[in-house]
Structure formats: structure tokens, C-alpha cells
Length: 447
Figure 1: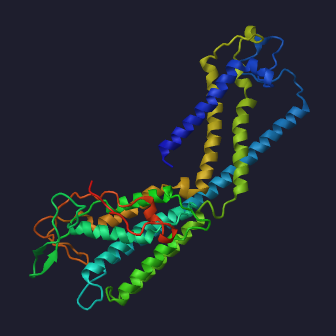
Figure 2: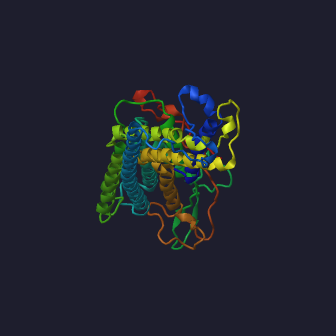
């Protein structure tokens, strides 16, 4: 959670408990009708009693009162110990989940680099340049969609959109955008022209499309959340994406679009991506979680946080002058009395904040981790690699994309194109047999 949001929640809890204590301090005499006894027993000489003296005048307190105090102390100790134990276990779980998420991110970006740099289209390959370019873009879209599907699966979202078909449509849109010959692109666009380069080779010029996969990631995440179609079984969207990715890779291998020396490395990276994704699901809230223990500690912690200010309310009414003890007059407490009120409010706010933090630790994908930054980070890296990290001012690239060699020598291509919405309305995401549309609409528009 954002530290600013956590601080704001703590201030709100503090204000709530402080307001309750302030209310008790003002109207404690009227609350006695409800059974709330806050006024301490006065001594024979009330003026001799020091401020905030909450001790009783009887030197031999009742044994039952002593046993009750000991019971409360033991209960508070046990609940605090249980909360600390759950916090520690939750912290280790969040850290382990974060490590798996970074493993997914590293493997996904490695695969994106391999598809961009290791695939080639020559005269002796089955897939030509146009077809191979479309396959590479579809693989990049699948790598962008995989962490989102994995995240929603770990959150317990049973939505089953047709992500793989949607990635294919997005790949076609990206190909049209980078070619610059589609009606959805406006402005000074260079169509798929040829420009002479060193060696007398003519190579196509491509248009830079900024933030394409970032927008695709955002809108796909939104589509997962607002999709009304749900199934009773767990979602298998991550497995479907990996299955499609493996199929494309094996087809490239069979078509000789990938060097045989790189094939084992890419295949192993796909396996590592699937393994890291399955390991992430272990730390979801719907998996191994001590629900009964968590709820017991949470309820007991809130009881302690609410009961402590009431039990210690004698500290906030000790300031009342003797002449108004038995009257209904409302007298505002002095500033020095607000110090113990603030102390009790801070303690109660800390206890409730620990309870909230405990739940966030045991539910990392919903509240404990900034998953938005994780999915957007992967999409941003894929966008940067596709656009060569905007290194178009160099005379020539160190290693151009193998499936296409853009002619960027001498002059820079048009910049600043930002794709519009990449996702169609919600019915497009449904499978055809579930009532989805068979003909998708335009997948992007100019902003």
C-alpha cells in the first residue's frame, strides 16, 4: 500500500478514538446511566488527590478485581503475540511472492528480447517477413497479457475472456500502426516506404508507436475487472496464454525462423515463466491461509483497541472539579488532560493499524503489493525494446531487430504517435460460443 494512504488511515483511526475519548470526557456523567463508570472513588479530602490519580482509596482491593485485571493483561499479551506472529509470517510470504513476481518479469522481458532479436525471415524459411512480424507482435502481446491473467487468477477472479484471440487482434493493429498505412493513424506518417542504406539494400521504414503495450495492459486489466461473465471453476487464462505462446514458438522452430542454437534457451525460458507463474499462485488469498486464526486475532485486536480506552477512561475524567462532579454541567477538559487522551488514541490506532496490515500481508495480490506497477513495468519494458529505447539518433543500431531492419540512418522516423483505446467493448472479450462477437471492431484509434 502507498505510505501516504497508510498514514492517512492511521490519522483517521486516531481521530476516531480521540473523538470517542473526548465525548466520554464531556458526557461521562450522563453515560453512567448506561453502566459506564469512569469517575474514581474520591478520598475524604478530594483536594489532596493528585491529578490523574486513578488508584482507589481502599488499600485492600477486591480479589475479584485483581483477577480480572490479570486476565485482561494476559489476554492482551496473547493477542499481541498472535498478531506479531501473523505479521512476521505474512511479511515472509509477501517477500517470497515479490521474488516470484520479479522472476516472472525477468523471464518475460528475456523472451520478448529473444522474439525481437532471434527470429529471422529469409528465403529458406516458411514464414515470410510480413507473417513473421505479425507472429512476433502477437507473442509480445501474449507476454504482456500473461502477468495480468496471472494476477487476476491469484486474486480469485474467475473471468474467462478470449485473451489469446484479443492478442492476435492487437498484433494486427500494431502492425498497421507501425506500417503507417492504416486509416487509424493520422498526422505526418511515413508509409511503408523504402530508403536506401549502406550496401544497396532497401529496408522498410517503420513508425514509432509510443505506449502501445502500456495502454493494452491497462485496458486489459480494466476488462478483467468489469467483465460480467464468470465461471464456477478457477480461471485457466494464464495456462491458455502459455499454451498459445509455446505453439507459436514451436511453429517458428519448425519453420526455421529461429536458430537451432537458440531454441533450447528460449524453450527453457518459457518453462521458467510458467513455473514462476504457478509459484506466484501459492501466495494468493484463496490458497493456504489460516482464515480462522486471522479472523480470531483480528476480532480480538479490535476488542482490545476499543475496550482499552473505556477501561482507562478514569484518566480522562480525573480533571473534573469536585464542585461539578454530581451535576449535569458540560465542562471542556483542559489541554493537559488531552495528553492521556492522545496517548490512548495512539495505542488503539496502532493496534487497529496492525490488524489491517496483517490482512494486507496475507493478501499480497489484492492489498499487500503494488501489482499495478508490476504489470505496467513489464509492458513499459516491452514497449522500450520494441522501439529500441528511442536510440534513433545513432548512426546505426548495435543489433537491429532480426525480423525487420528499419531504415533509421540519416533521418529519424516520425515520432509522437500514441495509440488510442486498444480494447473493444466487453462482448468482444467473450468466446464465440459464449455469445461473443465474431468480427472485432477497430482495435485502436488516434489520440
